[in-house]
Amino acid sequence: MTLKETEEYILNRILLNYNYDEAKSIAKLLLKFHLKFDDISYSISYQKQLPSNIMGVVNESINRLQWSEPIQYVLGEAHFMGYDFIVAPEVLIPRRETEELVDLIVKHHNTNNLITVLDIGTGSGCIAISINKLLRNSKVYAMDISEGALDIAFRNTIKLKSTVEFLHADVLSLEAIEIDKFDIIVSNPPYVTMNESNLMHANVVNHEPHLALFVPDNDALKFYRKITSLASKSLKINGKLYFEINENFAEAVMKDMLQNNFSEIEVIKDMQGKDRIVYGTLQS
Image (tube, rainbow, N blue to C red):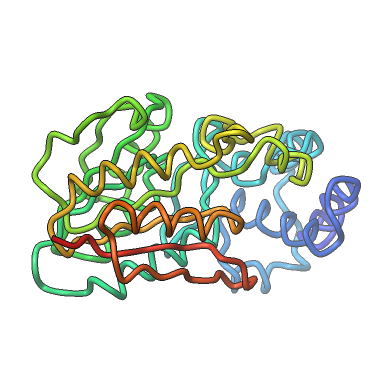
């Protein structure tokens, strides 16, 4: 089959799981990955015959996609902040909203001064590693409760040649962070309530780690409260705390930060116009 015919074959096989535009995009992404093509190579090869052995990996990938497995897990990587991160079911797939969080931090702290950073709930390491790569004079630590996640994060730091140091800890059980005080603490903690899971796509609910996604309906802010309390003791004066949030949590997170001696608190909307980032500055 030609590249064009193979793309159409994939598209038709997965249309029950995705709308047409999504299916076409996934088909192209899948073929580019397995053929190691960039956009130009893909375009100029569109009418060319593909090697016959490519269909084995194509059909294996199609079978996984038909079970609603995310394309990023099928390929084993996800693009984030210009880097290709290793991903697997032990970690969340990085989202565009989280890129907006990293963009904001880099914009606020683009300085030649040494900056110390702690990322709580690092998952794949995408936040910590991206900050470390983009803020060249940064010392970055990253924490997670999941050993599986930390293994993937460590593989990413080797792959992307960063210097992030990883800590295995449950933030909910910590009374203090035994490291020098930080200029920045950032977290994208679990924030989807169990009630909201009914509104989510099957490829998220059935495949991404619930440990990193969901919080109880009756205690949805438990990570924000704990991290804010720890940050009030672990940040330098004038250090900044950054959260990615559930769009429904902005007011409650801001109130808790105010009660923990943070000021200059701001809420930032994402590209969809939803409250998505809260940050503030620790006062003396």
